[in-house]
Length: 609
Ligand code: AGP
Image 1 (cartoon, helix red, strand yellow):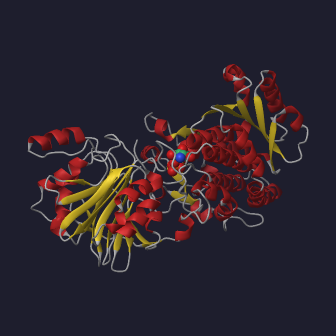
Image 2 (cartoon, protein in one colour):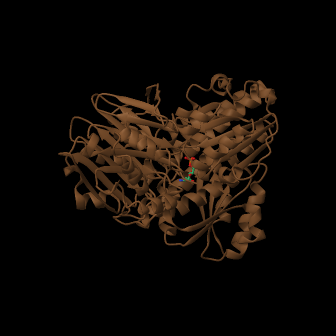
Image 3 (cartoon, helix red, strand yellow):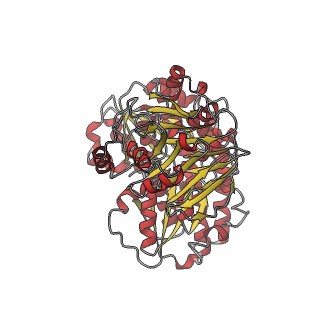
């Protein structure tokens, strides 16, 4: 949730830290701080507010020093105040620390430390770590930190510097992400890869319970028992440019527009004219597709919506009974996972705490796990039996857009692969399914190129306070996703519903002020039923915006506004219907003066429960 960075270099690090922490602002943006060691003293600046505002006031780049830490906060313990912003210190201000995670036993530790004379300057859970390190100040900073970490319950990714070991940067993690970047006579730590992409593409992924010492020359990794560990340096194939706005006013818009490309990247080399080529990627979890009896999909938020669409695809085309679970609920039940069940964990970040816990629960019960993940090296990717990377590139906008359509693409590829290998779909149908998917990037391109009508619609509706989204069948989750996008970035109250359920309750809300977005694409199963639902809304004065199939001229007579999407097979319509709803949410937010990249209270990666 918070973002942390640390750099040890031969040059001044504050401009680099500022650049890196800006790239992590999507993880948390209520406060920001930076600390460097200069002339053997800690020199720090911090305050509540967004990075640009605080930097304008405090001028972070003027901090001197060749070693330092920075932090962007998403408050968990303690209000949004200067005192609670990171870094935090020990009593003597020799040690500075930044932290992402939650120290669950901080209350008890704080009392204990206070009894021993430590005085606290903040209400955060984090500060206890600095004081615990101070308790072992006779040791070098690595050992002092290692000992302190033994006392912590909960999660942490930390960066620590100390004036007593001014040429060492200490990093450690447990359940919160942390990556180490390897540079040329400089080394880095960060919560996420995009932060350090401009400096290096060589990284080491720190595992739970590992602690690292970074000097300018080298990186050493140890277990919490102090035993050295051998780590692999991984080359990252993301480009620093991908993590920049490239002329777009917001990451969200850039990422919506990137979808033709990101979907193509997900497809990559995974399709020939007549085959889906997933054998190698899937083998670890599914050596024999015939043996799968049941699938359980676990995910949160937008990824959960992708899972609902995946369920539809997998049952319809591959004929595998599939259930979709909120990861946060799955982990706290005692789920029954019979033999022959495989679990699919879907996550953009690969670091969502609830999805990680659900994955571990599934593995504990003997299930094999397939991850559908965007971020390489992430915890979910590392802990799963097979990983299907979505290859959407870094997604910085807090509201997930391109990651979602890439997840849908990946789930479709997996479905057709399983359908083929279980002998469910004949070869000619496999070919047709492949041909359908090939059309999608161009069709998404068509939608984003014709965004004017969506913008105009947003102009009509940005002052409304509520909206209802309706869809049926495979497009019901698109109603949920459309409503979530609007809520997240514009703060309007929006609800997604299965269209037929409307008459069982939400119909009470409909009047001439209520915009109702209906996914009403032409298909043989639900189209006429959806038209009836539209008629029910119109009969009560509601304003209907339809997402309809190109060429459906009759629908114009039945609704107030239409946004057309190109035609493709029914099972692929969610990939197209999602896009105008993303753009609509984006423009409503922007017209209403909101920053869609930094929605209030949200964080991109939810690494706490
Ligand atoms: C999407 O717009 C949200 N920001 C959120 O619901 C997100 O999808 C959810 O937190 C899951 O994240 P993940 O895909 O990284 O696991």
